[in-house]
Image (cartoon, rainbow, N blue to C red; front, side, top):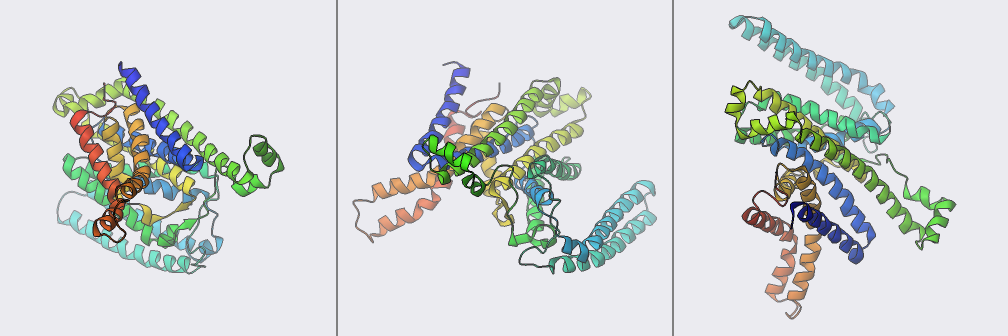
Length: 434
């Protein structure tokens, strides 16, 4: 079998699996798997740029995805005018004071000669700036969060179309990646992994605790959609007539139509990013990045700025993850900070990249779809298998109870087995790098 036929067969297999889920569990389930698979494929593309193309070990993917989700809130939710009146102005002043203190500290460090004077100036700027910032910030937070905390209690967003939040999510993630990269990209790969994981946890902690920004653990619900609402479709006589003409009742037809609209939007974004990634991979820039990945010493001897190139691709990969995060929050119509877990939004994405094929964009897309399908379907398949195995056993028998209670662990067990099998028999992934 040729390489192209093998690759096509693998994608066809994933398509058959999704269609099979639709036949057994319903079209709604299949479309839900498809939509989240598209988002997972985009996340995998971002990580593949960083690891597959540049060898950067970023295990803070969760933080960049969460920043994308925050963008959906800041862009699309309506403005809370009462909160802005209560403390919005002071919040802006506080943030400007904090930023000014940081800029002044950096300026003093660069302009003053090394010695006691520079050290004292930096300490004074940092301490004075911190206390001034906190005095303004804490007062503003108290007033903002006091405004209808059950319904709002935060500043809200700009009230713009939610689809604008997708590129904004990429920009937020890119900005955070620039700051992180300037600090951490000089570290060795294992230290870089620890640093990115820690920073991702800091980002999630901020989302959980800063209620004035995104309601914290009270969550933001009702994020606007870029597609029609089911109730609006069900109230449209033209839609009802069209659904009836093809044999669907209005409720099911409206649900499927909305999910298909999301699938069309997500597919468009994935194809654009995949095309751009392929163009980058096959360009002189892509060849330079692979050369740096394979041998930094010789690349540096050829005059390449290793740190600058690493920072560049770290920002690009993080921006793609931010876009995916904004898309996922749009699909969920809510921001839930407690839902961001490293297992789901970092390590599962890494499994997608490794299984699909590190260094190959098509492999990352395949891994995104395949691993997400298994992540969703393994537990119900495991439950069916355990019910079959324990059917001859008497109710209340300890082994039967133990096996049925262990179904929840099937996901982790299956992911581990798949990873081991792929690394043993296809260590470069299902679609290896050329």
